[in-house]
Image (cartoon, rainbow, N blue to C red; front, side, top):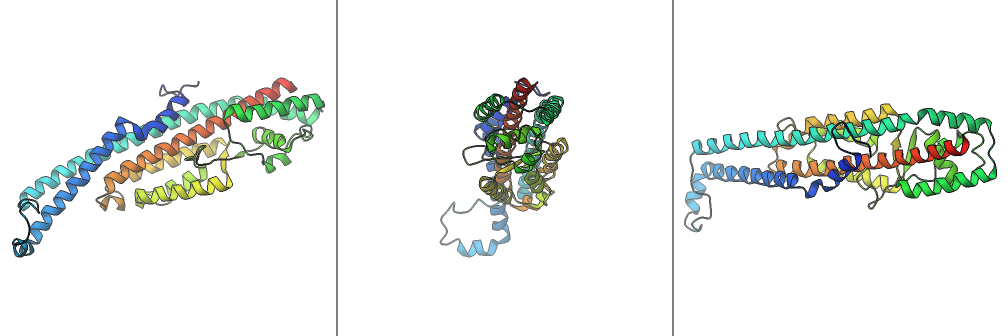
Length: 322
């Protein structure tokens, strides 16, 4: 399997994304986030006691001993706040390192995938040129149909049968291949710049299209709470389950997808977004990082399957036709 410049195979990266929620790294982040949230709550309780001293005195008769935190002065609270600030800064740095690592590796993964795509550009052009001039025998059509059907299964690429735009631009001597589904799938690898794939809660459930990811990352993401981002992602997923998902073969679109991931970096800088005001920010941020690991893992997994499908079909057509 292809290895990225980061020393990981595409399969390694996909597996790491799938298992991240169950990793020790994620557990430690969740533990630290919870501790920070509790520390914020503790400071809030101490400050409440100071700012509401009269209420506390009035209630002392019926409040059980130990019901409230022990009394501390303003100086002690300031010390706690300084410690919290240091811990928050360290936690934010860990989140940023984690996200930078993810972006770095996914860029390396896509560099490998796009290299595989571009490596077949010459053969693709040869096949199109040949099929525009040379008529194929019925026996060859049968071989092509069988090959395409097998590849649909072995590649794991959920390419839909309907690729109408590409079908209209197919080479003239592939038009007569018997099954419409075969013609449309050949169109997907030969002439389409976009491929529509089927995704579901069982297959590539977390994958987003290039346009969806770009929209998510550029739609004031730095001002959205993590829970709102999760809700937006689920909205995309629901639409994709119903209508299919567009995978782009254009190199500039893939670059745009990666730039979209990089633009998310501003969101993880605590203090630069409104979500940081919330006491639940730390746990939510940890949760969102896990969710985005799943999303990016499924995107790479989907692109890998589609490119694998294309590689096998093009090499099969090349052997049959040339």
